[in-house]
Length: 111
Image 1 (cartoon, rainbow, N blue to C red):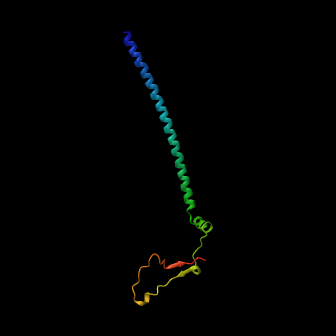
Image 2 (image 1 turned 180 degrees about the vertical axis):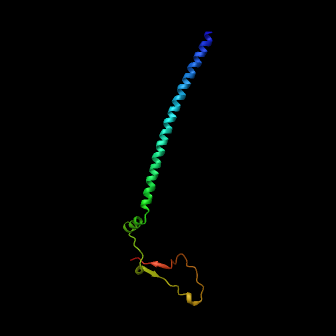
Image 3 (image 1 turned 90 degrees about the vertical axis):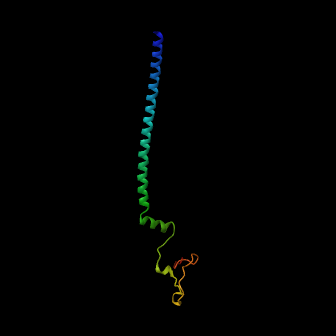
């Protein structure tokens, strides 16, 4: 009978240790899930903030101001635009496609 009692005592101790290990793992995983949820909430807030900043930076006025100030760009006007005429149109020759090296038909002159 003592042999059976010892076996039951060992089984009881082992199951108790297993229960402690399992509850520790479940608490650790719960904390990890809560941290992941907090990080998800932070990332969602950052994404909303960055989206709002992107929309703000992409407004036409902001882009135009940046082009003028940082890139020294200006609006194209008639006095800085040069129009190129193709002299072959009246000669009966077929018009050829312009080569990439010949440039566009309207050229803006830089002053």
